[in-house]
Amino acid sequence: MFADKEINRLVNAYCRLRDRQYAVYSRCAKEHGLTVNELFVLDILWFAPEGCTQKEICERLSANKQTVAAITGRFFKKGFFYCEEVAEDRRNKRIRFTAAGKAYAGGVIPGAAEAKNLAMADLEPGQAAELVRLTQQFTENMERRFTDIRR
Image 1 (cartoon, helix red, strand yellow):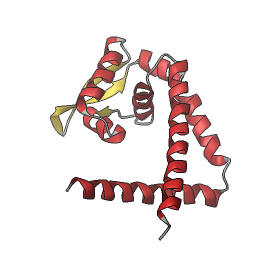
Image 2: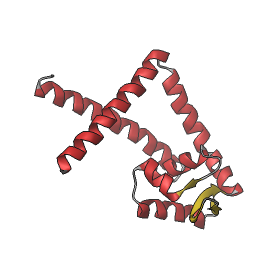
Image 3: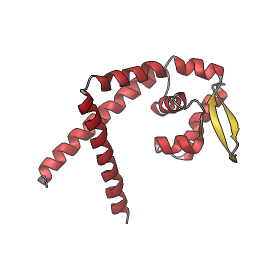
Image 4: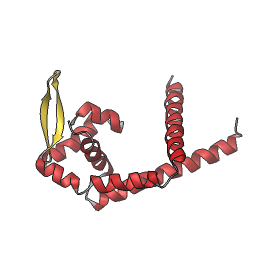
């Protein structure tokens, strides 16, 4: 086990990197007059050709229903989203892009997605896979440990 000082140093270094990544998304969002969560909602829907339910967006963002409802509500008012019934569960509605929403998101999301892909491609293939593996393991450890402290 690492010494406590070393663990603290590594956690702080990781958090600074996570914050820098979030700042990159925030700058991208701001350039398009969006909040970072609005950017994330557009990204989620862009890569879900069949659309998403509000619940799916909440789970993906780890956001509450009110936050996602406010974001999607703004896009509905702009005419960027519409809803369609989910055949298997009529209580749920699938959120999808309108033609205007698809055109708007098309000016934002493909460029951001390409930048992410190029950043990952700048790593060696083994490094990219290891980054994902370690981030997944760290995230699962955090979920478990944070659950432990609530008990």
